[in-house]
Length: 85
Image 1 (cartoon, rainbow, N blue to C red):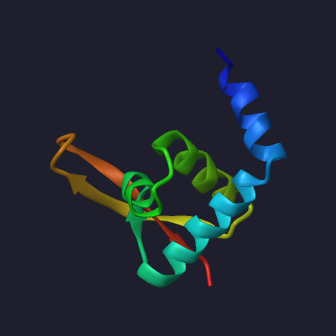
Image 2 (cartoon, rainbow, N blue to C red):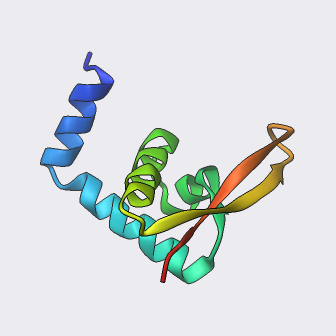
């Protein structure tokens, strides 16, 4: 069994993280503001990975928080993110 850190390092080494980031950024450019959960579902990336890639893109200022929207499944407001053009 591996730790989160080991999994992240393996993903990074194999180039998966870069491919996932490209998919996330491309999606946000095409579709517009989405929640992290929607990004995960549409790209078929695990939610933890999608959150990680979105956070990396936010740090690089390629993606920004666009606002919030109501998630009926969780009964909470969730952040939406969008690509910076």
